[in-house]
Image (cartoon, rainbow, N blue to C red; front, side, top):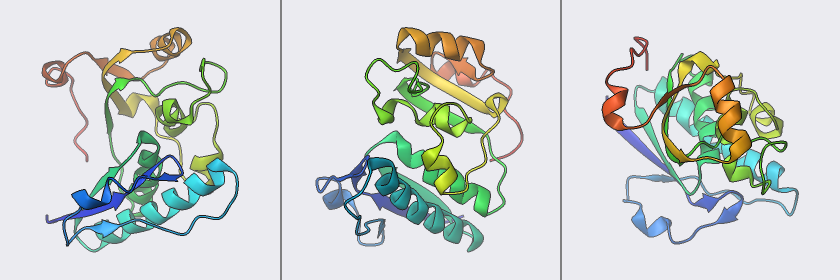
Length: 179
């Protein structure tokens, strides 16, 4: 399967022009005109565009590779996978858990919430805007996550999300036979 690279040169809803020089000529740039509106509306528009691109490449027989400025873009990728009818296991590799909600986050930073959003916890404005169905916690493997907020640590411990400390540990987890 041939790769199709999609670069979304934004951090949350703000442009990151420093990312674009990384793109090769064959890459798609997911850049859209964003209105002067609420942050989550603007981010949802980026995720919608990314979801469309991911679904298009998958249904055309290509493997989409998303490169973006923050983890919230995973909402668009997951929505694109679902639109293409792909059932998947989510392996989240990050030093942070990204499993906060408005209630657990000390800062309220949206960039610390996308994994929680993907499994249906907390704020659902962006997942709902792109038609994303929640991913079952049992189908999520969190790798690393060594820098967690206290309430985020509790939420993860009480969840069904599988956790691995290192990449080597990943090899010991039985993964479903699916993408």
